[in-house]
Image 1: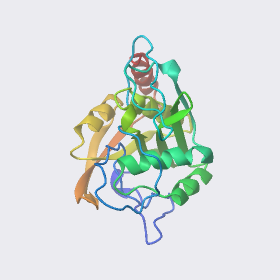
Image 2: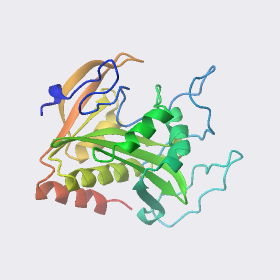
Image 3: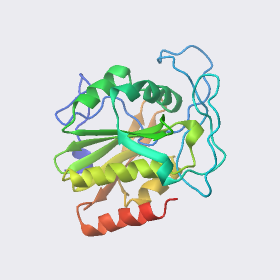
Length: 243
């Protein structure tokens, strides 16, 4: 299936392959502080998202007044990060992060709907000492797997959480028989594009004005032949480079 033939949402926001109704960059950036009222669900807020790096373990700071852990002073080891399937009990934390990093956050109902589609979806969370600090999602359609979202709490960026989550999704896609990975990213998000290049993604096209809130174009990227041993070796190498 070529990138241009990926189904787009109809009036109901769903399609036969269930492309999500909300256009978004796969890898989110923190939103600026709100200057007014918001229709988003009001949950506790923290400060910035996460990615990877490590050395001697540095204790996580005590919870803030709102009960959420704040940023830490040192890098995260892989043994400190637990990646597991997203469950409904995680959604309060997921929605809190969602509101921090996306201009048009997904609703509780949309996440619940996605979690029910187990045969064609994979959603996972990354936790540190039990606290959800990041999450990601994957949609499968025939031989293609589409990364629907990768989001990291702004308080937890620069700890390779995005890399770990994408590794998890790529391996899951391979296990489910996918041959290609695809995603969209804002054309101006060079940092995310650099990460995707490490995973073998290459540009495949442009979706004009894909992000309606800013009229920004989306760069469509594909990683092909992920079912080949060479791609598995690439993932092993990426994982070995993490702390």
